[in-house]
Amino acid sequence: MDDNNLILVKGVWGAMIPEDVGVVTGMQTEAPGIGCHRIRWITRGNVVELVDKIRTPGECRGNGSPIGVWHLKPGTMGYNMALKLLIDGFDEMEECHENPTYHGKALVDVLTELKRRGLEYAAIPKVFGVPRDENPYAAFAQKHLATDELEFDDHVLLSETDHGCWVSCWSFISDEDAGVNHALALVIDLDERGIFKAHVENHLGNTIFELSNEDDRGNPCSDGLWLVRDGYMKHGRDAEGLLTYLQDMGVATEKNTLAISG
View 1 (cartoon, rainbow, N blue to C red):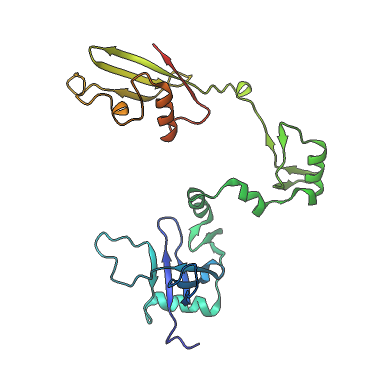
View 2: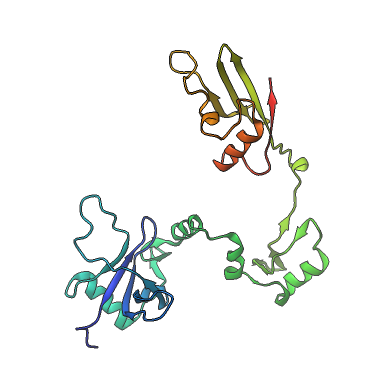
């Protein structure tokens, strides 16, 4: 293989994500992505991706971010390793201390990062499971056990035993049966002499949020309650506006309700 015109690159994606190695196959001459580099990622099953910029060594200095696609200089260790992968092929599964890894990272760590990046559980049964209608255990379960409160995915996970098989399913449990209460209370602690103090507590009485327009000296802040000032609430007792804010911040869920107390 003549590597005089060979351009090898590595992709750096951030913490917990393994680096990738690829080869530039040319420039994109048609839409979409005209002018972008076409990169075939050796470590990603030879998938081709369009990249608008390939960075060169020396760009990342000081506090510059290392994330991006980088040109590998011929003769360097990184280039030689990438060239070996290109010639010999890449085995995605490695063994490290008897635990499977990907680029030296434990698969559970890679999966955790993929979840953070948007991987949903619905994709898991399609990889680890079997089609429900093609498996005798799953087919029996769907035909004889499925109800409005017991459902089976199109692909199910199986755990076979000596005398049968466990089949994954979804079992519905109501809030009432589980003793779950989604009601939140906006408790007014003080509303006089221009000072407003309140807190939000859950059904167990635990405080999950506090709000106040009192400054460090015990006086009302000149610009008022910040949630009102910034437009999240119309006034201090605006439970609807506060609940929307708490849901946006992840403090409350879509199931929660909020009522004023006190």
